[in-house]
Length: 509
Image 1 (cartoon, rainbow, N blue to C red):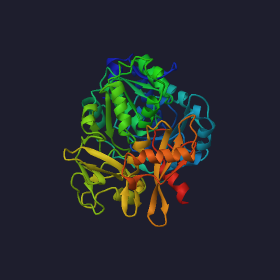
Image 2: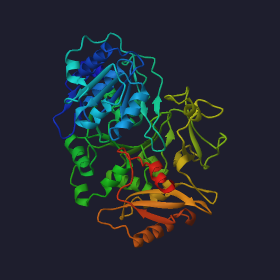
Image 3: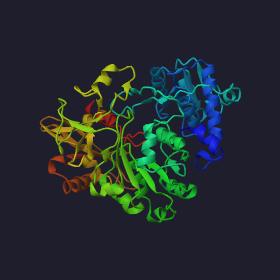
Image 4: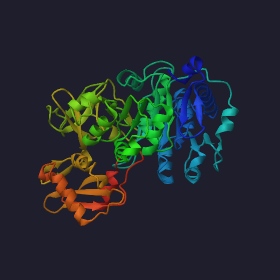
């Protein structure tokens, strides 16, 4: 289903609310406005398979653009609004976008991007004027009648670029109308997480990211309400859960850590009893962090592991996780396979590259056939990988170790940084941590921890010694950091992903 269905059955129900504002859309408004935009784009020459680029912060209009694309056979490419103008322009042009829609709240960034890109069919700005852009509001107000045909569009996002220049991930367009069933994530949300029309879903992460955009769309397909926060704040999140009666929501592990580090009085001030599903994904969650969240909120914490490429998905609930601590669950769409460097499948317990098996190849990297080919298994093209490493246990539960590119090889031994990061994550002196390999003349690489100290904590040689001793008590000695550096802030994307490539470059360039 899609908003048009709910606009007919429950037109005045809220589809999306921007928290702490007077901005919201009912299903009637979302349906009407997305249909008007679809017509406006069609009249400007866009046709099935063309791309609409969206540059916005968290605004309700994002879902108007999303559904306009999906109901008219277009791709939507939401672009990271924290990139530089040149980086945004690269993605817009690389995607081949024929339309660029921007939020005036991004001001100078939107204007500068407009001056760099070659988009020529449609340039629209909402929420105010942007030089070089037409009025989004005027385009909707003057749009003609609804389109008669509504082929289903798709989402074409770009990788976060944590290990290189971002690449577009282009799935095939579905061979169905937008109002016909078939979207896998909708089924996942409904049948694995039990989400439906009565749910109020909290989304505090940036809307350009895969999870907020896709899951917001899934909630609308099911007839629920999305409460969009402008940005994540730990104390505000607890207040929003109580204020809006949040029943389901999605966060990343760094958000969990910030919530757990709130003063006890703040953590217990609000009634969180409406919350029955709290999903986390996007980055590995340290086991002690997850255990603390379950202890605090109860068995409402659910996890899935997937990627922007959407080539597979695993699922695990709280009780399963307590029985299999550290796992990200079992594959729920197609089998998962663990393979060595030559593509040979490995037995349970052995670390290798994670492949998901699907009926067809689920994606291609736009303008990069070599990378597309490299993501496919050498003998089974419908087994694909995004380069993550992990292992399966005897029951088929998947455990992540790290990305292949971040594995530290010291003296010929593989060391997975995530294990050490998990140990340090909840240390009271640690606000954030990254573990990387740095060059060593004899061992090839040695382990270094880069730590952002907690507020009010000074990064001293004494603290470095204490942290090294703390890790030594908890992991094998060959994995212990040989040194600790302190920084004011670690490079993370707004969705919580650590930009390790940038961090490693600072030590190797």
